[in-house]
Image (cartoon, rainbow, N blue to C red; front, side, top):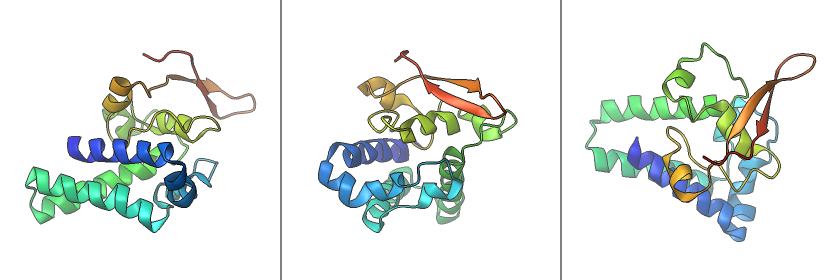
Length: 157
């Protein structure tokens, strides 16, 4: 999890920091503005290889997982990524209970207009955002007429 998280954080941040890489590759993923589960896997093939495939290969090689364990782990990581993009913050979601800090709301902040320079961490922990100053807090507020609204706060702790 640590290797996958580290690779994805730094590659994701690079995709946003490099104007060329963002426009040419990563902007495909951000074209889907509304939270949508399958947007997690909607990306340019180069972005997919650099971010997803290589992080998986690095995690597999560094951990010494068996092929069967790797298959289970990568299915789990994919499900977690899809959940982070689904736009549903359900109180009974077991992934939100285990990964309390990195959840649907956390990643929704990243996809909001103006949010692309923060909350890069995916899919498990937020340690890199906190250590490197790209973390931004949020509140979850009830929306008039139903539903929830994610609001960025000034809290950068």
